[in-house]
Length: 99
Image (cartoon, rainbow, N blue to C red):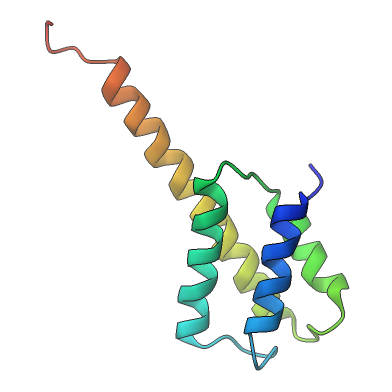
């Protein structure tokens, strides 16, 4: 699945925000998580491999480790959102409480 314009805009925000492209600071990691949370809460979906590919080709990222970390963060946030959304749906629909 190709990345949407909204996702690409957020990836550009991450690129602009991160000062040292060879390593991520903890505040940057927290902000990256927030960016991905905002995306998934707004209904955006993305392919983690496409995110990794985008950062590799963006040009300013020369070190592989932060790219992999960002891709892993995007995967973690998306998976966590899907799991909690699934649990909310199940708790609403699958009530076996006898009502």
